[in-house]
Image (cartoon, rainbow, N blue to C red; front, side):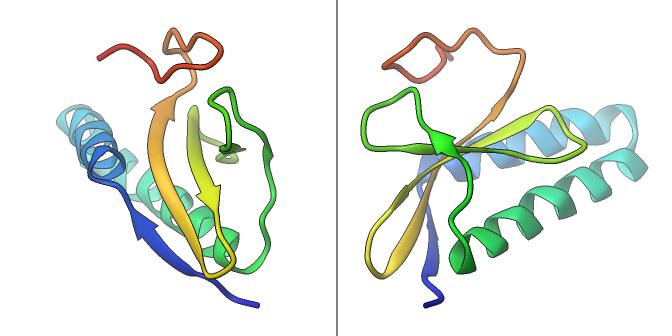
Length: 99
């Protein structure tokens, strides 16, 4: 069953800020990172892979060949993208990284 994908406002902000940061240095580097993240999220709609999340009720998917992690929640009909987080961020168990 393919689930629909929904993004939280926080996830949209995370994505836009991260891609903007990369693009400031090199727009050419931002495109493939962006594509890898979006492709991985699309694949989650078909096959939910990843590990138990640090925040209760969530899962985390490491994005291959990037330092990013997608935090998401699964329901019967949808994948909810909650956050997109750089792996170097301080991310304590049970909480989202501090802004």
